[in-house]
Image (cartoon, rainbow over all chains, first blue to last red; front, side):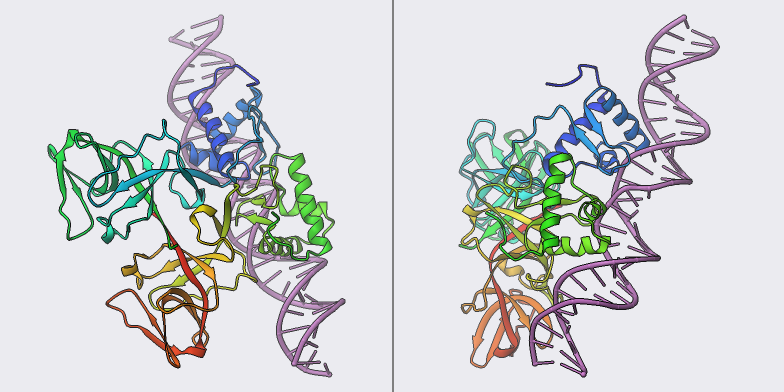
Length: 219
Length: 219
DNA sequence: TATGTTTAAAAACAGATGTTCTGACTTTAG
DNA sequence: CTAAAGTCAGAACATCTGTTTTTAAACATA
């Protein structure tokens, strides 16, 4: 049960949420300055000020003069199969990098066949990640081979040139390509000089996620 | 499964026991000086020295320069345990794939700055694995880029054509190349058409491990 | 014996981190 | 409106804390 039912400011809720997330990713609590960075706060004094309030309201406990002496009180800890500092990423299925084909299901509704654990230290961000196994060699010149596992961050927009998992509504197909918006159209560019780009209406393309990593195993 | 079964000194066991107890009583790990006090040790350097050993032997994990950055690894009560079906692989350092240079230390005597967790399902074998971060682009045509993390299985022999971490005794250098024995000599072949192979005496080459995987992160 | 390795102690160093102070801006109560 | 309280920013401060350096004792090995 949450100890207090007092209203918290946006900043305080954000801090609480950050601490909670930090404790998921690390085996030690965050420092004041890590909270400052994580919540985009301009001064450590503000962090301290709001931590004071969070303690007064019963959300946390603090050990004075002790680094990282913050304890979450409303946390039902004790469970969590993933090692601290690591997160589990679901491998949702396969994606075509050659001829587009395999659809991959939505993570909300599907059960990942497997998951991979990676240390958060390696990852740019730790939320909304998923993985797909690559079929085909259209991204070979970007050093992504058939069979590689590609990590994505779920996003619905992409910057020009980014590698994305694209869903082509009309064809009901998913494909791994570089993303180049060109007016009303979108060019989906493979990284293989023997293959041609795909041109589709911007409205027909749905960005599923952008590539943040690659894993390859030689078996 | 306890990571190592190496002999620990009385002092080291006591420290381990103290850390375990401290984590039971506090929501944050102990500092070096708290361990010093708790175990009646006369200097922080001695604590640091023995913590190094505990990490080398796989009992704990440490986050450099982070206060209280100690994590118990042999603890299966939720905090600090590697996820079931996963193993932790030490990232020992860097290896040159361009001009050979950076030596990487021996795993028996070195402390991994970080580890990566991978599910055993992805791995061909789960024993004697280690990882190195690649410097240079000599393996670019084998889809291994500068900055990639390469997983090795520790072995002292290799099949012709396998990608290996090679130690050149005379030069005191380590390099990532493909292995081709040719009589008395060994050809170490880069996967970059703009680079030339290295020829050395067979007796001058020490196989450290063979490549079993690649991990790449875009940050 | 000579030499190198392991373990230890003491001190100093450098960086990480909690805390405090001052002033300004915003909101609220009267 | 005015004053008090609440919130925030920037800087400085104090100390907590990981790391390094130096020196040396104990121990094993050649």
